[in-house]
Length: 294
Image 1 (cartoon, one colour):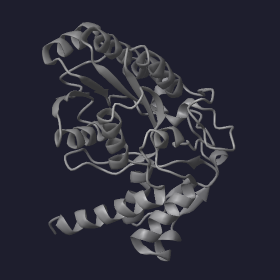
Image 2 (cartoon, rainbow, N blue to C red; image 1 turned 30 degrees about the vertical axis):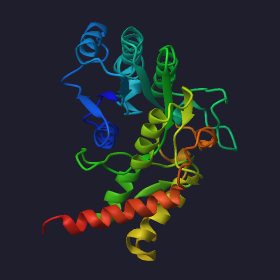
Image 3 (cartoon, rainbow, N blue to C red; image 1 turned 180 degrees about the horizontal axis):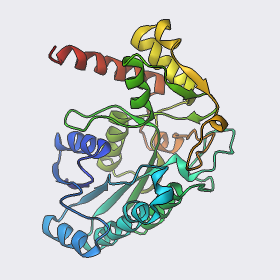
């Protein structure tokens, strides 16, 4: 397959390029090469490379900054997706778009399914939901909701996000503050991109899927497992539990945002548990340290 990856220099995009390049013809577009909010530029780029698949890994991911920069968030997360969906329709390509658990309000007590009604509570969340709607206007589209991404690709940038922050603080000798009342379904980057490839290669029914590791946990439970794997109880003791109400945040976060990946399993793609993913992540981090000079 001929695959165009947009947002290819970011954490998710670099992992997609690495995964697909082993089996397919990949064309990578970073922000400098393609402004997805520019309809004409998108159409010209897709006309030039003629992909069978367009994977959109570009996103405005700073949840709090989106409250002050709504146009930038909408350009990356929604209007850029509309441009890609239109290009996919014109050139007969399949579109893949990554969304987020933030489209839900977090008031559930059981994992959200694809049929549950979204209710975004922030600019970022609303922009991602609008992106979902635009993506699904393409004749063939896969919208994959991921959350709490962790891991790295061999050629990707330094990992960012909550889990990277907890890891860096722990290994730097600090005391990370971790929510004990926010529940998530962590997503290991290699598992998410592998599932994406398998969906496309198997020609599974297009539509909306939750693409997360199986199971769910609070951030504190995940951090405890991470700390224990890194250095045992001594590191676990460094974790500082906090409640969401105790931390001033510019944008509202959903308190309970576990996602069910049962639909993904129904098409033959069973995601490993988050505990299994964390074990592999820690093994990879250990191997990386052993390879590092000094």
